[in-house]
Length: 115
Image 1 (cartoon, rainbow, N blue to C red):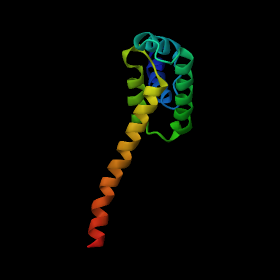
Image 2 (tube, rainbow, N blue to C red; image 1 turned 90 degrees about the vertical axis):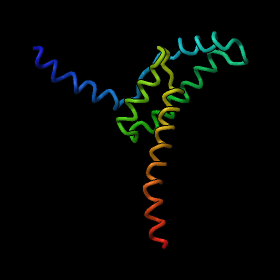
Image 3 (cartoon, rainbow, N blue to C red; image 1 turned 135 degrees about the horizontal axis):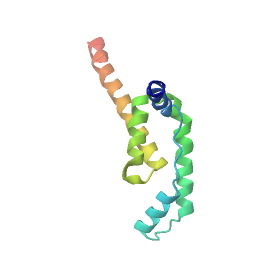
């Protein structure tokens, strides 16, 4: 039986990146409000932001490379306070970086074509 488990375990990790993670962000929002004090935001405002961020993440999740998903999921879980806002920011930064890298590869080709 342990042999079957050893083969099943990698499959479990491969599929984790295929679904948008499910976080309980209420404790994260509560902690943020405690740390920041009452500056016009409430736990409910924070929860609304987290729900909106999750919706944005879900919209684009299937097009995100697995390496970026893994890296950003780990980042969003750092410090024990999971956050869809953190996940979204990480995914956006990785996307911007990936696009910029593609542009840098294309720019030299365009320069040589215009000469």
